Image: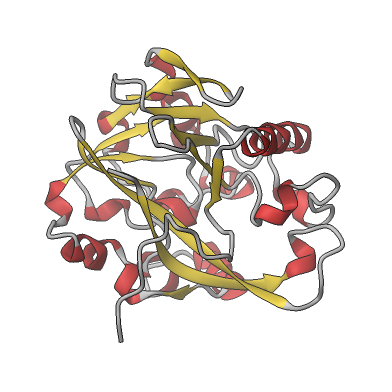
Length: 274
């Protein structure tokens, strides 16, 4: 099954913030998460997107309320996980696994809907999240209030999985489900432990490069954004190197999809007819 990507929300920002020499006009950035029916692993999500735990409710911490008021994500109700799964004839209980590419709010906000799912993630990164204070986690862009308390007991550590070569010179990736078809490829720089997913068995290999850049145009030479966008990277040099690897994969004929790219993609889940 070809993976599909739902859009949990839109976030607007000027193009010049995410593409060097971009215009002042605002772009509507998507906040994707993936849905993949794997032949042996079952129904798999890749992250969970934004959800009401970020945008609503009196129980949110003050930092989370400030974060939501600054970014102002507009949730897409028909693309929230429960609605998407219903369209696919499934429910939250049918989700066997969630691949968690990193721990930012727009990737973990709906984890609470899946209390039984295995979580494929970097155990060492999560251990550091648990060990840090809430303030220290905020400095890393992590809102630990969005993470299930039992998360550590459900993590399948991708750093302990066998590795296989990814196509198009991408390097090695952790073989998530033991068949060499779904590989977790380290793409450091955006966030602590950030990785992408290479669907190596697709007719055209697909790399879901998550937040390596916000916009596909930023992968072009000389188009990666400078300040202030670079300030939010955990490691600017590593991010630049990851961007070059993703661009090289694309140049060798692979498909690349980014979480926030505003352009429509053939991998996007179709909109619900009005």
